Image (cartoon, rainbow, N blue to C red):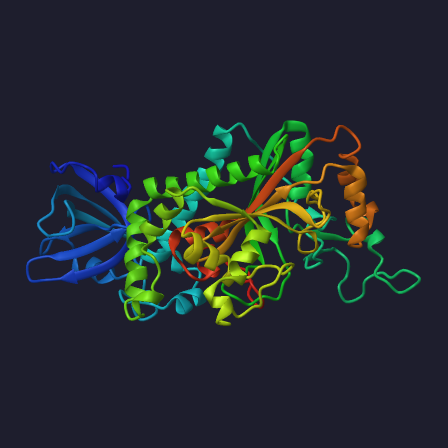
Length: 478
C-alpha cells in the first residue's frame, strides 16, 4: 500500500479504509486500554494519532516507538475518539525504520530554547517551530516565482562567482585556487592573481544587480533569485554571511513604476502566505504570544495575522527622504532625545527612525524616495538638484527597511563620473558602462533580502532562524 501524506490523511472522510502513514514519532503515551502514537511527516504542523489496542503490537516494537523514531504504520482510518482531531489510525502493523535512543535523542517532548536548537541545526527542522518556518519559506519562494512569471518577467541566473563589487563595499569572500600559504607573487610582492584559476581576482557575489541590468536591457523585465554573500563581521540578529536576494530589473521603468511594482510584489507574496500557510502562521502567532506574555502590553508585538494584514490591506505612504527628516526632527522622541542616533539631513536613517515613521507617525508601510547621493550607490540616477538620487526604500513595521531600489543612471557620462567619484576603476566595469553607450534606456530595479521577508512573515526575531543552515562569523557547520 502506498503512503499517504499526513496532511492528506487528515482531510479524508474516515470509513475504515486501509491506509499507510510514514513519519517520525512526536509523542507516545500508554494507558491500560491502548497505546497512542503521534506521528508527523513534515507535510503539516498537525500530527496524526495512531492507536493500538493491547497486544496489537509486540512489546519489542513498542519499546522502539520513542520520540524521534521513524515508523511505518498500516491500519484503518477511523473517526477519532479523542478531541483535537477528526480522524485517527487504528493500528494493524508497525514497522520501525529507524530507532532514536531516548537517552541520546536531544529533541524530547518539551520546550527547547532557540539558542539550543541552533546548536543542533541538523535536527531542528523536526520541531514544530522550524518545520513551520521552512514550509512558509517554501511558500514564499514559490510565490516569488509565480508573481514574476505571471507578470511577464524572465528568471535570469546571474553569476555567483564574479569580479565585480556591485555595492562598492569591498566586504567580499575571495574565490581562489592559489596556495594560501605560499601564493605566487608579482615583482612588487603582491599576490599574482594572473596565475589563479580565472586569471584575475574573483569573489562570491554580493548582488546580481549589475548583471541583471544587462538582462533587462535586452529582455525588458527580468528577476534574479539566488544566494549572495557578505564578508561583514556582523554578529547580530539581522545579518548573515550567506543569504538569498530577489532582484528584479526593468527597462522603461521610472521611479514611480518601480515603487508600484515593489508594493504589488510584497503584497502579493504576503497575501499568498496568508492564504496558503494558515495553520503554520496560527501556530507561530500563538508561539509569539506565549513568548511575550510577560512583557508589558506596550512592548508586545502585533499579532502576526494583524501585522501581515496591516501590510496587505494598506496603501503604502510615499514621501521623500527630506520630508521624512523633517517629520523626525519634529517628533517627540527627537525632542526628548530618545532616539539613540542623531537626526539631520544627510544621515543614513537608522532602523529606529524608519520604524517611528511606519509604526508611530503614518501607521502603515512607507516608501522613502530621493536620498542624498552620498549615502547611496554609484549606479542610482541623479536628480536635477545634483544632491539627491532617485532611490526608494520600502519600510515595514517591526523591521524597518525591507526593500532597497532605485531608478538606475542610464546616462554614460554621468555614470562614468560617479564611478570615478567614488574611486572604482572603470576598467573593472567596462561591460556595465558599455550598456549606456549602445542603446541605453531608462530602467529601474530593487532588491529584497529573502530572509528579511521570511523573518517578517514568520514573526521570528533572529535571522539565523529563518534559513535552514545559517552562515555567520565563526560558524559554517554542515
